[in-house]
Length: 206
Length: 206
Image 1 (spheres, each protein chain N blue to C red):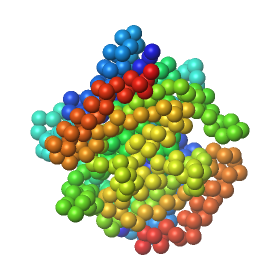
Image 2 (tube, helix red, strand yellow):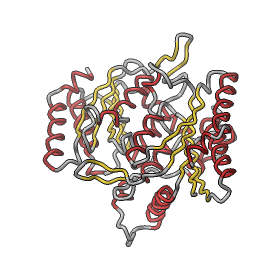
Image 3 (cartoon, each protein chain N blue to C red):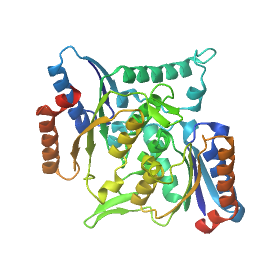
């Protein structure tokens, strides 16, 4: 089993999403000690934004300057890691009602026609089928129920774009209301950790 | 009148959103030759992602290293430009069902408590009231009607986050289906340009 572990929270050791992805990956690893884990910290890497130059770069990178070639190669490597993974664990905090720009920049590198999707006469088809996606979703407020759910452009977005890539097994391990006081924060984290510890993640990834 | 003109499309001269923001700003300027225009190209600037270090930096930047201080100052300048503007014109192409990561990174610099929003006992309150926001929205497919509208995390997101900042006057000048053949593309651009030329933008910004 290959696990891809992605973090995007910018608050380092204070990041709840990092704490949760770490717990999820530990559970997976305890169950499958042979699992091969690839880790990417999109916050410390400062994954570069997509550019026109990257998209237009020739496949063999001939004549392309060193900085652009390195940038294209990073994107290709991210895509390969994603395609190779059986289970993808993504830490996705909500920042300003959406995902971190770092995480969007990573997703923009995955969205490559012929790799993660293609257009057919019957419509678009996702090509990254059969993977499990586990998202550690953290948010300052409560966005699970209406009317606040209309402000959720984080989980809804991830479901849309990874669904477009063909991933139908998407589980959210959620801790929300994290900015609503220490008690609520502690409660939300404990609940999420309980969900992870109870083996739900293992059932999901089995 | 102060106009803030923002582009985020990464395709340079091929960018339809740039073509539309340019037409919108030209109309506004023709009507109000005294308008003061501030322009930011988020794609060429490669606006940096939000980081924990920026958020945690002391207000007076004392003891902060030069790179981080420059980064914080860019964010503050972006926020000041936004707060000073009467009309904000944003070029917002849909990339992978959401906005460009560059545009998200800019929005993350605007979302500052006490500046664009605050929490009160009655709930959150937007502090950037009274502005007009005109979005040049471009997309490869058609996302205006169901079921495809469920994949729209671009216009819906912009409406949510700028609504949170207190902006209620939001107009979308839309060109969609741009990847569905040359005829459809030409038609969509012509329709959007007609909407702009007919003075709808002026009515909006008056």
